[in-house]
Image 1: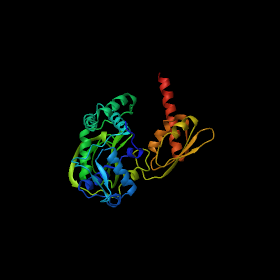
Image 2 (image 1 turned 30 degrees about the vertical axis):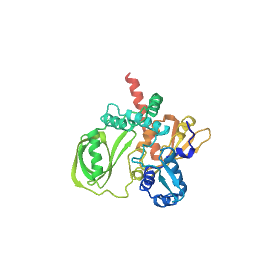
Image 3 (image 1 turned 60 degrees about the horizontal axis):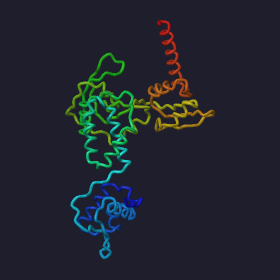
Image 4 (image 1 turned 180 degrees about the horizontal axis):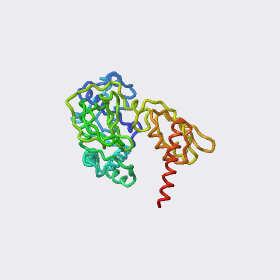
Length: 335
C-alpha cells in the first residue's frame, strides 16, 4: 500500500471541497489565492484541501504554470464518495449501540432503518471492521424512557412550525390530571427521560413536562413566536438535571477518598469546582437554582458524601436520613 502523507488524512469540510470542485469544473483555473478569497480560508488550508482531493479522492487535479491555476485534466461528472475513516467506523458502532437502548420501544424500528441507510454504503473493508468491533462495545442504560413515538413526532412538528399544543398532564403526587396548553420551545433527553420545555401562557412562565405523563396531545392552530434569545444551555445552567427554580444556591459537598476518585472522573455540572482534601478526598462546589435533584444524587453516595452547605440542604438530608432510620426500624419489627 503506498504511503499517504499525514496531511492527506485530515478531511476538509464537504462544502469547502465542493466550492473548489465547482470552480475547477467550470474551468476557471483558480489558484490558492483565488480560492482563499472566495472560500474564506488561508492559502495554506486551500493547498491542503487540494492535496486531499487529489490524493485521497483521486480527482484528476493538476496545476497549470502558464495559467497560474488548478484544473481538471479530464471531465469529472460526479464528485466521488467521501472515504470513511476508522474513527468514523467506530463512531457508527457507538451510534448503533446507543440505538439498542431503545429496543422494544416505538423508536426502535425507525432508528434501525436510519442506521441501515447510513451503513448501507460502506465498502466491504469497513463493513468487516464494523462487524469485528460489534462485540467490543456495549451500552447498559438505566431504565430507558418509554416515550410514545406519536407524541414525539407531534411535538417535533410543533417545534418546527411554532404551534401551540394541548394535552392532559398529571403532576407527580397529584390526584388527577389537568389540561395544559403551552408553547413548545425544546425537547430534552435528560438521564434517559424525554422532557418538553415550554412556555405556559396561563401561568406566565416556563415549565418542564415529562413526555411519559402527557396524554391526548393535539396540535392547535394557534401560532407563536419563540424568543430569539432562548438557549437550552442557559435555561438549564442552574439545574442538576431538568428542574428549575428561581433560587441561587452554592452547594458544597465533601467526598471521602473512595468516592473522591469517582467524583474526579466525571463532569457533573457546568459550574463545578473541585478542590483536593487532606486524606485523598475531594470537595465539590456547584451553583444551582434547585436542590431537589442534587439532594437525591447526594443520598446515592451514602456515608461517602457530607454536605457542608447550604444549611437548608443539610437539614433536608438530616430529616431524610432520620425518616429512613425509622422506616427500617419499623420494617424490622414487622418481620
